[in-house]
Every structure is written in structure tokens, then in C-alpha cells.
Image (cartoon, rainbow, N blue to C red):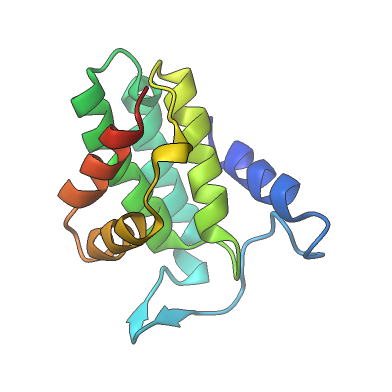
Length: 141
């Protein structure tokens, strides 16, 4: 599970919606005045993050709590990169589901509370991943 896989997830999810599905954005974007990663830094930041994931054996052989903690860090960093113009959240969530299943911690998204998840994602953008880890832990079967 690497960068190419993440791009393939976005492409698969949005191939019938956007002709650029799976292609990184080329413009700088901001949310509420806060910048996401600039396109000129994508390669470096994606390499850093996915190397971190690889070095941790894709979060396998961890307790549910340790998995949730590390997955929250990974997801918050992936969100801060914000590789696409649209569809980042859905692609990130789908990738997280695959990562969790591969790591032996399948997730049940039917338990997801959208407002709490969104709040946890927003807080994680500013560095606090505890709420996001709690959300992920609550989804582990």
C-alpha cells in the first residue's frame, strides 16, 4: 500500500466524475485560511509519509489502540497533503479501510458518526490526533 495505490483508489472512486481522477492538483488550496501542502512539495511529503508507513510495516502487528494512534497520525498527514482538488476525504477513508484490513484491524464504517469524524479530522489538521485515534478505535471490529 503506497502512493500509487492511493492514487488508484482516487481514480477508481472518481473516474466517472472527474477526468482528472487520480491526478494530483496543480494549484494551491486553502481551507478557512489554512494552506494545504503546496503542489511543489507533494513528492517530498508523500515520500516522507509513505516511507513512514512502510517503515512501520503498514501498521501491522499492533494492538487496536496502537493501530488507531498510528493510523490517526497517518490520516492527518495525508489529509494535510490534500493531493486532489476534490474527493480527498472519501479517498483517504477508503485507503484507511484497506490499510486497516491489511493490518488485521478491519473497520466498521456503519458505526461512524459523521459530525464527530469531521471534527476529529479538523482538529487533527492542527496537530491533535487524539480525537481521530478515538474515532478510528471506535470503528475497529
